[in-house]
Length: 113
Length: 114
Image 1: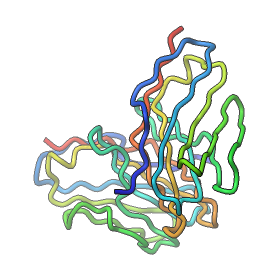
Image 2 (image 1 turned 120 degrees about the horizontal axis):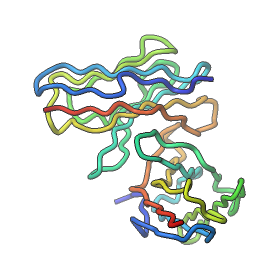
Image 3 (image 1 turned 90 degrees about the vertical axis):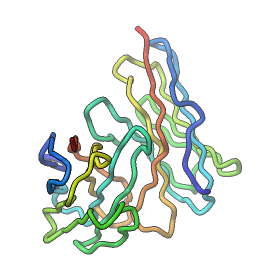
Image 4 (image 1 turned 180 degrees about the vertical axis):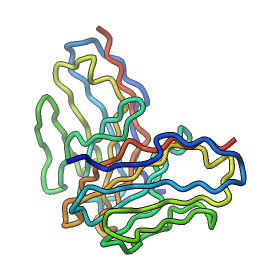
């Protein structure tokens, strides 16, 4: 069925290294994607978004890449810090469903000092 | 801005009791969403409102769940009667609803049904 999923449930990186978190989606009608960060005991926090008419968008230490050909989304975090340790979710908006966001299962990022 | 405000932060109740979760969206936001998060199923959309009107409630698990939005600044999610399998973290989120689909989440309500 249609779903938003992640390749890796956990990712462990060394402080200072770059992190890459991946996400696959299956609905070609999706036109808006968001990455959220969720720390323990807190609600998801917006990181960065991208629309389907773009293939790359950069923020502060984060970059989102969108490959519509293979329906793949990635989040790159530069110079990963201990404070980046959290669960990261990708979410898609499936075009014709208003503001409804569908979330993937999440990847837990652990940063080792 | 105080962000999305949810109450209570934690709720522990016994099976069969009524539970009411509350949410105050960000002022000026026109869309409000209720999500449930569990380890098994992740973040699931239960229902969302636009301009206080329920748009999609297909995610509501069963008739024991109901949600209301009597005005632009308040919404409730009610479970009656509650069951142990309802134990989860319930999040409320809001968005401008003007074509910007970015959702802003509250801190959630941790519900435990014994």
